[in-house]
Each structure stands twice: as structure tokens, then as C-alpha cells.
Image (cartoon, rainbow, N blue to C red; front, side, top):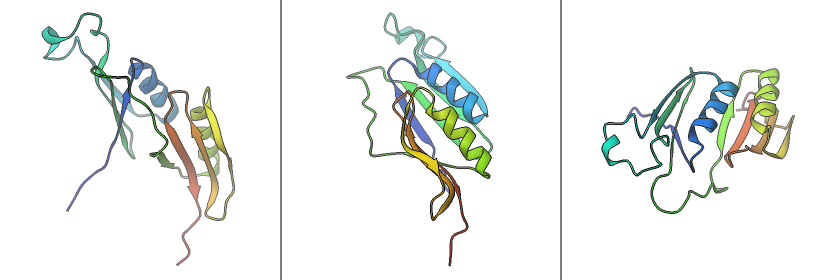
Amino acid sequence: MSSTLTTYFIFNGNCREAMTFYQKVLGGDLKVMTMADSPMKDQVPPGAENLVMHAFLQTPGFALMASDGMQGPPPVNGDSVSQALSVNSTEDAEAVFTKLSEGGKVTMPIQETFWAHRYGQLIDKYGMHWMVSYNKPMPM
């Protein structure tokens, strides 16, 4: 079986802002479709035209997708899932961690651990949980 797994974030009206932030931190190509841009634009509730129907950030190593929640109660960002981002150097780990944590909350400062040259945890300013690491080789 061949498959891929892509993270899909649901935001509460600030999807474009968040995905633009992630693009600045992580790089990649960002494509955004608003409700007004969609083929369903005639069914969009008044005031929802600028909400994001679908955003796609493609980087060389992974993709992030997202949209603004439209129906029902606003989404609640929980602490049961974290994005685990692995990088290729100590410098990259520290730089990405610093940028992602701007305006957010560091839950474990980036540091050396027994399994990683650098590892840290944070909740970004959009409420999303991240683990950033530059791992050491796994002992066999």
C-alpha cells in the first residue's frame, strides 16, 4: 500500500493569516481558495465570502491543508495531536522553533535530549501544537 498523510487544520476565520505565517516560517508554495472563489459561490452565506474554503501549503518534505470552519460551533484546538517537524540541523531546529513560537507558548524549551540534538515543544499563536526536532541517529 502506498499512501501519504497530510495535516488539515480548521481555523475560525483566520485561516489565510495562519497559513501565510506557516509559509513564512516553513517555506513552500501556498494556494488559497476563498468561498467567493469556489464553484459554490452562489451558496455562500452573506459575510462568508472571504473565508477560506481550502488552503494548501506544499513544501519539499510535507504539505499542510486548512480551511475556515463554516458551520456549527467554532473549532476547538485540542492538545491530543501535535505536528512533529523534523529538520536537518541544529540551526534549522532553533530557527524554526523560534519563528513558530512567536506569539505562542513554549511548553518545552528547545534543548538537547538523549534522542535529539535539539528538541522542543510549543503551542503556536493559532493554538496548534508543534514538536520540533533534529534527531540523533537511532541506536540499533
